[in-house]
Image (cartoon, rainbow, N blue to C red; front, side, top):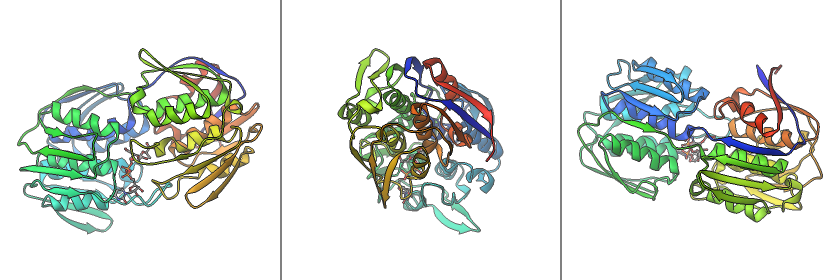
Length: 421
Ligand code: EPZ
């Protein structure tokens, strides 16, 4: 397995480019299932998850050209409307083929994703919505089998603002007969981006980005050529890394409106953030110059759970105490023991972690457990004035395109190596 070897303690300076958004690209690739045409997607990030999604679509019978940042897909006439366990267990977002398959083919057999490191993550809301639109759902040896002659629009009240649940149901409703309302919908920028793509394909969706989305079903959707928005979580990760090490970094293509909660919290902590044409600049004297700041994660427009671990890494060195509350997932503090091995002081009680700033972190060999925990450990290692190794870096590669190639030009001493564990 590969690892990242980092000699930290150096400030970061320069310009870093944000890639296309993973959590926009994944549902958008699935939207190709809704049309016979050849879809062209640009600014697609070069990530393991994108490769996995393309592999799943090919398994189902789609034709594809996958050369990020360009991806072309012809997925309208899949021969196998099924998502096998082998692929779904690698990536939960595979469940996003469910809505499009039922809407377009009247049938889908998708492996239940099972739990994952950060929580149970059921898909009951996805299934409830499809049933409300007339699909019959049955469980068959770990698989969901969904069938429907033609989905019919319905008013669906979601019990929580689920991101992929909203996306699955928006794609299904786009080809349903009649009108659908998603009440209690997720409001993330990636939801708005998917609605933009579906509307370019001929769908009639409005309200995306609010908690009530209206979809007027149509009979046919056509092909689309679309460039995907930049990745707000990657952008936020780079802003946090520079705030932690100190320095002056311009994050090109960061969209301030997509990361307002993070910008507000970083300013509260004392970092200097400047909107500049085409991105966001961060200036900082390093985490030790920042004030401990509390965060509580919430669905958009709250503080993103996907930036909780990275923010905590910065707070391990800030002056005073920070209270980090993880309200979205039930087990998203696996980075805490690894931070502890580097000398951080973090006490976890249930969904609340209390972080007490220390003078410095020490380098160590640490284990990545999930995508954003890996990013947290990279940030922590960048601050430690000696050598660290982040093992199982395949977690990181799921959501960050060649992170060492983006950080090294900023002055970080970071390289990829072969590692144990
Ligand atoms: C999306 O996951 C993202 N993934 C996650 O990003 C992100 O952490 C999450 O949204 C929250 O923002 C993609 O977009 C591909 P949810 P998703 O459904 O849709 C519960 C990353 O790091 N829930 O919004 O799976 C669920 O258990 C990844 O890029 C149900 O109970 O998250 C969780 O506690 C990690 N029943 C909460 O809702 C359901 O039917 C939010 O989950 C659906 C969800």
